[in-house]
Length: 244
Image (cartoon, rainbow, N blue to C red; front, side, top):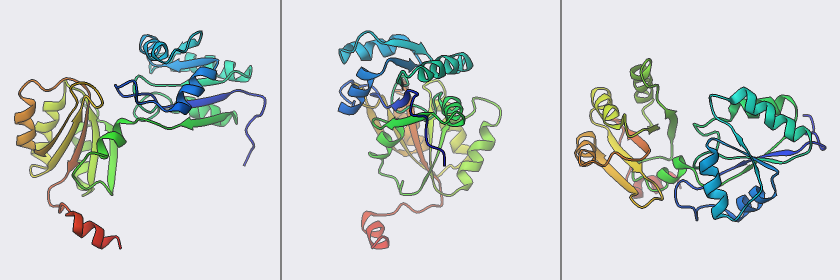
């Protein structure tokens, strides 16, 4: 195993709040403050967070799916100069269904330093409030918008374990319709607008979830946990008995 370059800067992968700006660690604030540059999806949203944290004078690098090769070149150049760079996403933990894999791969090939700064994550935030079994689950991220979507859902349902997807407000009702055809007896848990003013957590059958969302509650990003039909929902006492 090679030792990372000691003369180069470090890329810090920094988790930032999902919505509530108080959900950031002291360490993340310190790292953002000492980094010479910050790579972010949206420079405007990053600026709002930095102002809230009273962090000024940072070079902001726009880094998203559409400019990834150019942005990676900029970041590598800064790191080679010895400048520390923080990578943040619009909300939550970078890399998890957000741009960043290509950057980490490029840095690994160059044997450069990468350090994660843990914190808020939409996936773990939702799971921590989920009353369905998630001691064993599959995280699928965002589903394909069109081609391959049905095949992907069928594959996930066949795993016979709870699975988790991210969904937009524009496709959440479509997702419920699709699930009704593939896993009609599934139990669903939804977390939306997490940590924000209108945050809400809903659990029920597909039809029960559909009725609640029909009241205009389709704003915000959704984390959806699906517990397939045919898989027993474990009661608390049964779970603890099996794990002792």
